[in-house]
Image (cartoon, rainbow over all chains, first blue to last red; front, side, top):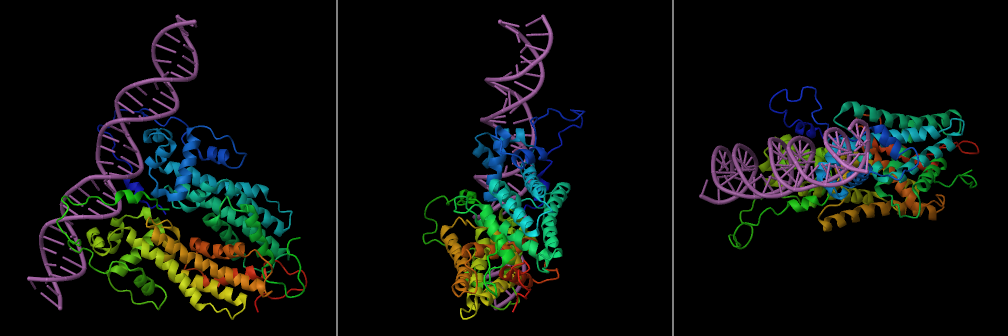
Length: 250
Length: 250
DNA sequence: CAGCGCCGACCGAACGGTCGGCATTCCGGA
DNA sequence: TCCGGAATGCCGACCGTTCGGTCGGCGCTG
């Protein structure tokens, strides 16, 4: 999604003469904390949920909900400002442009998910336990930051700023590699069959990721509950065992 | 994606007086076959691939590839016209508005997938065989109509025209119900464990649907190959069986 | 000459983004 | 304690561009 079209719209004018403000920063608009991926990453995710005060946080929450529902290109800055109860100019007081509203969000979700899961992973456990923990925590992360997750996963995968894009893809790849490592460990230990690890990993992550399309927070099961059922079905299979039946979960 | 904003932009003017053309149809622009979901549905999907001649088909193919890559709101009519090598006015000669470019595509994919799979399903087979066929054919459908599939699955799920939206959701639900019926039959026959059928169905479909996010046609495995591996893993599980090992696939 | 495919030029609205300026609050010096 | 400038939060009005969509008319073919 989101083409490179926006680039052409940037740089509308370069002022008339060439030296009205010699040292740049002619007025220091958007003086407040602009975005700072790390700030958002730590504020919203990772740690405990803070009371979420301040305009910036409000704007972020509104923006990511709208981006999740209508897509980046389907939401105008006016929409966001209106929903926040402020003027569009005020919006630009906090964020220099539209991209910088979505970028830290997309980057933050991708990075924080990996950090969260990798921090909790324990190579000492069995592969099944590690997989259950990884998948369950992923679902918990999704449930907690649902709108941000959806906005992140469906938008901006080719951020026009290629440095940011590369970095983000790096975090995603690290996350996927972690899942594959768990599966490989299980195969190496004889705990799992000699499966095709990349395919298995993508299957598991796919089923979890697709939850964002149908998961209803008001439903009976929580997201981790669902994800763990996924996990158990993949681990033990859904067929009745050929010999006498035995429960899957230990 | 795709909000209701576009509605506000419609109906730009209603002419000046009220009776310049008393019987409507003042000039019959867009005289060519406009869209006709069924035509597209049958032309593109379902039957054999035809040579794909004519402007309308070209426009469809270009549009669905662009919609898949950049999202509905991220693609302008100018983009589509440019890619087709025609002018924007010519585009409007064939399609009355932007929505009618995407609507038959979204409807066609959703409907044709269900028709295709349900036509091939045979309740006389075992549940495992039915599931494998269903999943494999879904993947085959995806592989064949990849851009259309992506454009359809990521856009326009709340078409402003609610009749069309309801109908489309109906086809999707019928498809999902078919998968659940297969699983229920397996459970009832004792072939499968007493699983949570809706959760299992969503897991399988989720993993297949998510393929559209990473599948590469130039890759080593075809989409049905991958999907069937998914299927086998879900059926037989990936854990080493507790007693002596036995191959999963019969 | 009727119909079709096609187009350049155009329209009003909405887009992302900017500007100057109005209140209010903060804060150090007198 | 009071004062005055700086910073902050905010906004109405505006800019040039691009949007979806329309219009009248051209050239070609049957």
